[in-house]
Each structure stands twice: as C-alpha cells, then as structure tokens.
Image 1 (tube, one colour):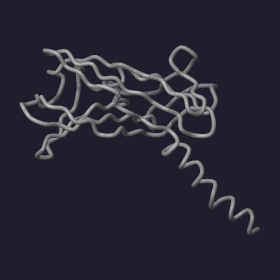
Image 2 (cartoon, rainbow, N blue to C red):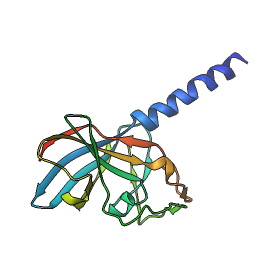
Image 3 (cartoon, helix red, strand yellow):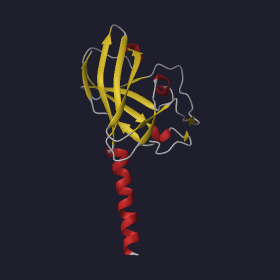
Image 4 (cartoon, one colour):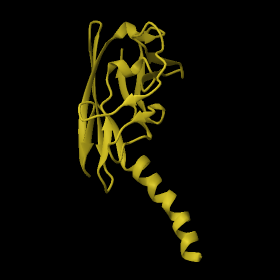
Length: 162
C-alpha cells in the first residue's frame, strides 16, 4: 500500500518534469527589415524519452495555438495577429507530414514570417521583450502516434528595439 501511494505521489512529478522541464522553446533569432519580420525558434527535447511534436506554422497564429507577443518598457502588451478572424480549432489530425519525432537532445527549427504591421496594437519606437507561446494543450490532437507533446510551452524573452 505504501509503495502504491509513493508511485502515485512521484509519477505526476516525473511526468511534469518531462513535459514542462524536458521540452524547451527558444527564440533563436528575430530580424525585421522594413515591414518584413523573420522569427526563428526551436523546440528542443531535453527529456529522457522520444516525443512527437506538431510542426507549428503561421496558420496556427489564427487558432491561438501559436502566440507571438511583445511587451514594452511600460508593460503594454502587443500580439502578432495577421488573421481576419480567430479560427475555431475543433481538432488537428496528426500524421508523419505535420509532426516531427524528437529523440532526447534533439530539436527542430521553425521560421515564421510576418509583417511588422501584424502586431496589434501597432509598435511604436522603443524597446521590447518578445516571447513566444505554443499552446499545445488546446490542440485537441487526433492521432495514432505515440508520445505526442500536449503541454504548453513558453520561450525565454528576447530583447529588441524598434
């Protein structure tokens, strides 16, 4: 009975560390020239077992699966939204074409392109901290693939001047 209780106490802790501490979302680079912005980010498996990740893209901004946000020195928040409307996400079917399997210590890089004018409200001259959210928990993934990552990820902050 004591062993069973210990297993139930420690199992959630190990799963939490695999999902939240074992997967890292990083901003690699953020460049803008004129009105064009390129954001390079990576998802890295620092855990002990293989995971399957949905490959995020520009279309995922419209479903709130991908959030690109900035905050100025005064605490005002800005969000990239190049869409006409929010798309209601019923489910995403995962297959070999829209996922990547990451072994421990492996990652993949995703580059997202958008316009400076896609920030809402519009950016003003000043200093900003950029961060990215990947909200896998709302993905409602339909798949037969194993070890699908369904935990939300938050990147480190990336300083830029506009």
